[in-house]
Image (cartoon, rainbow, N blue to C red; front, side, top):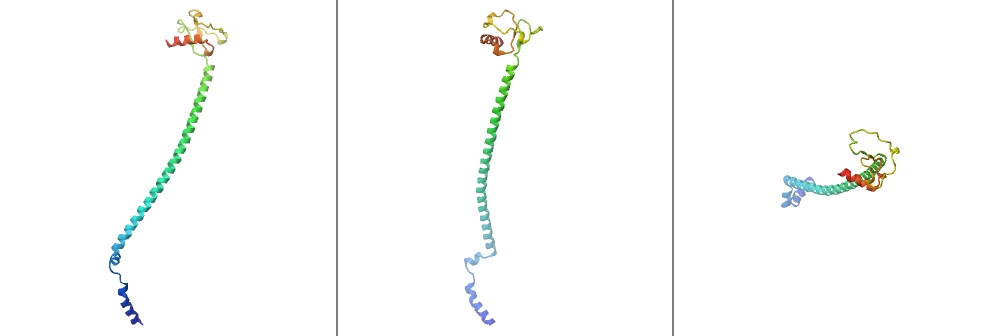
Length: 160
């Protein structure tokens, strides 16, 4: 039986033999070349997919950062506005409660004169600054009490 099997294998061998372009593509060098080309193509395809996914992730992260920075900026602006308003209110409160600087006339700045307490001052000031006696000493401890004309004259004097 063995010789018969060997005979049929000998006759069938040319039918199964690979010839032509298929046989040329099955050389180890050609197979390695095709493997390398397929591997390189697969790496390029994966890189393209990763590039797309990376671009999407970068845009999402940038959008999140922009939103967070927007919230931080808005909160900082609100905090700044609040602190500015509080500082202005505190400055106005302090300005009302703090006496104005004392302005002395006719060389009184070079001599030390006792200043009467604010309660001892005359509460009524003349409406017209020309009614003040020459050499009058003014102590301004609350600018709201000055008549508008006197305040305007005082500011004009200080600016000159």
